[in-house]
Image 1 (tube, rainbow, N blue to C red):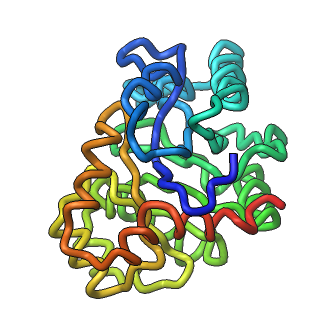
Image 2 (image 1 turned 60 degrees about the vertical axis):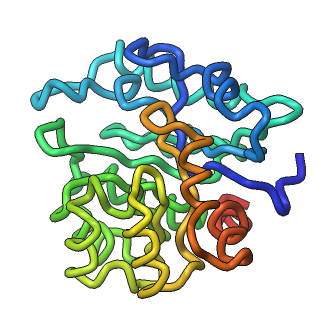
Length: 255
């Protein structure tokens, strides 16, 4: 499907192993069928990658198999009305070797009290170098301190998408206080963010590095889209946020 001019959800979880929510492709499609959404970026649910409830989590072959199955599931999705753009969710094995030509981005995720990434490891540095070589964007959801170090030091030349307008990376204002939003390689998405923060971001930093996202299954794709469409924004800005920006970002990713 040619997604030029299409509305694209740039933030959705999808998987069939984690049963805490119905996060299958079929479930997502049931929410967007009949809407204007024609494309979606999907990455694995967290609980298909690591045990987020065990701060002392140690990797096992069982979890390695879950990760492999989860990431591969995304490569099989889509239909005539909805195009799926898969991102690879990486964990401490930093399996960038699993990247295929279909992958257009990386998901990197951790909350406070969850098991930590081994940022000092050789494997981490090699993964960052490979992501940079492929010019792939990273949806990066982490604690504020790690976010600052990742953007300013570890991955300073990588295009980083801070999701939720920073809501789970320390907060919108905290990200602003550390002068991250104005950096040319830092992007964001609107998933579960308030209309006030979206408006404030656009007023301060422009509309070219912000993308519509739903955070499915935690957000309703149609409702999150309506939130943008109802805002007092010029039409060309709405079109940029809901599709053009993410397509431009991905146009030279992993090519």
